[in-house]
Length: 455
Image 1: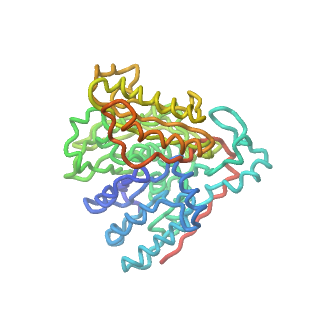
Image 2 (image 1 turned 90 degrees about the vertical axis):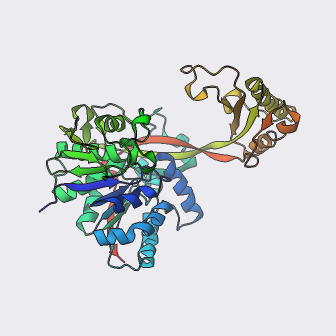
Image 3 (image 1 turned 60 degrees about the horizontal axis):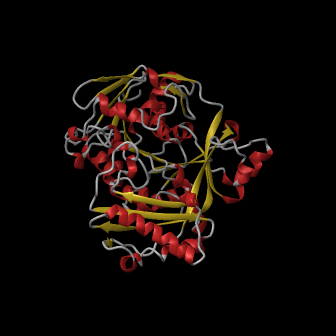
């Protein structure tokens, strides 16, 4: 007999999120499942580069560090942990988790690995079968960047996680599983939902979307931030899921933050395309069908969600090397700060040209932070600010040109206008530019694998 409700919480919204989120979730109240979302498009390329340098790398190391703190509580309370922390090397992540379990003096914990999303090495094979992998943005063929590819991962759904749970995994490590699928999987497992019950799959997907960014649905990044109490102790979101597909969004009692129709709705429209067709590997969810209702203090009921059959294609997130960049900054203070900052930028490029180093205008970045650059054309800039931050950068295929650029910023302290300060961190060094290549691939070509082992 399934539990009703099943308590599912998300403690990480990205790689680098606060480690206190999941630690507090397992300690501050009851919980059945803890999900952790670590991956974004650029994250996969970073992990692939790390793996190339070190075959034992390529996963979210924060996950292991966090597990070391919560393993005793997870084991004692029987909480199951589901994370896409495996990145491009989920097996290496499992080895690190095994070491953490042994370090904690625990044993008998089953750890599942879901793989098959990494298609970087399979691209020629797929192309031979007629897959174009053309850019969804431009329609251009993958061949124009193929020799510079860094990563390529298909977004997979909840199915393999469900299988890992069925095999008894208490910790499930996956690669590029879509964010909502992390929370959908335990609902399918607990309630024995059919993989073609579109309305229920859509409801679980909506639940996963609401909590995928952690406390962004409980008062974080909220327009009416002054109304959010005790943001330092903001409560991370918990879904109370029911077999019929309805669920409540809440947080542990006594925590900070706010869980209202408004905070939940704010997260619902986050990263939204067509609200009637929210595409995932599991289902097409209709966000226009969602009904929200306040159902007590810090408790929102979600119902009425409708779904449609899953797409025939899966999205692929690929990345490629697109040159190099270098960015530095200075603080310009005193009277006429804006005018002096613009002069500083002009001087840097003029001196580079004197030395035979030129950058096309479209390859230059000049920003005066403090003059409404984040809201240009919307928020009027302040009149005559007494300090601004000059951010100046360039991009180019040749990193040697960028090194020359980096050497011309600090000299402005003594050979520029007065009030130049704030040069810190050393010369800006060239870094790779990672560009995004979204594509589609036939679902039947993606072969997921599930492996469950105990330590």
